[in-house]
Image 1 (tube, helix red, strand yellow):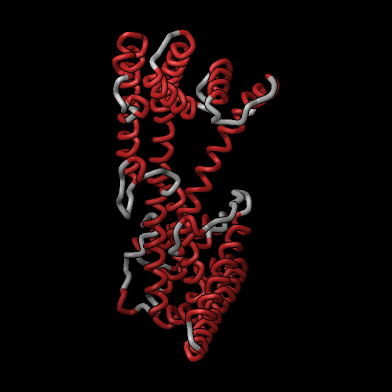
Image 2 (image 1 turned 45 degrees about the horizontal axis):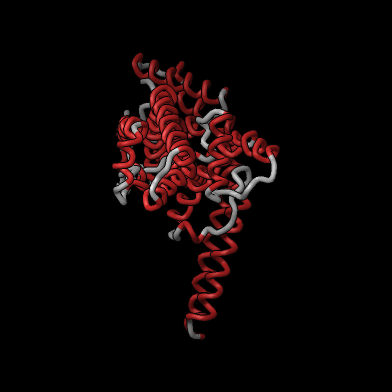
Length: 394
């Protein structure tokens, strides 16, 4: 028997309710562990592919956009353009400058020109001296880091908002990525305030009394579960050797007469030895329940004395695994890539990446053609006759 196959010799009709729950939770944990591993592997692969394929294309695209900006800016300052067309040209230059401002793929000289253009169109405050412009450029890497951090914060806020059933805008306070507990405390405080306001302003006296009774009852349930969970953690920490001793006492492979069963019990004991050495409570619990399943009295005793508490630990582990999975899923902008599903699978991330790559490749080709068009001033004048010229990006 390998990998702790709990299905062997298992007679589910003889299991207690807590044992059945224990087995269901173990199965759920194993499923979530596999799902998490799939997501982690896919995320890693997509990140590697993005580094090798997607990001270089983005760099090329941003350099093409800068070349457009530089070309149009030069025309504005060196060529005579009709007033109506000049307005459209200014709009286009302004949009390009906004798009490229603080872009990490530009060189220092390109950043400097972009800042000058942005100041001309009052996209940022006018800098009084070159030192301040230089400061803007030197701070660029920090700004890029800040942008990444903002995306992480937004992803976490979206996940929390979805879990508690509120709009993202409801979470109108700052999130410190290094102190999520403080953020959750603010969430709790706001929920409590809104609940109190609802009770005071929306309910009559009888309804308020009824609601308060319900709230107190729910609060007691939560506190009781928290207490039970703490007790279960404490007991689990003290139980490793105790559980191992009971497993060893129940197995006794050296006393087994049947050769096949002796081999199976030896494998079980080896797994127990490894689990004890690694302080793997979950595997020891699996073995403990499994070895007791042939003895109804022993199985009932475990259910009564341990499994209820252990099940609380397993429920907590299920929640943590699901949170890790959700954390990966909602770190990506699905809607921006045209995905509107409620549930996502790792294969969806691959599809999203392929769609994003195809999209940016198409943008690169389109803007390369536009750059060639802009370099022909006579043809540019024809393009400027179109009212859509300034916002023709998509």
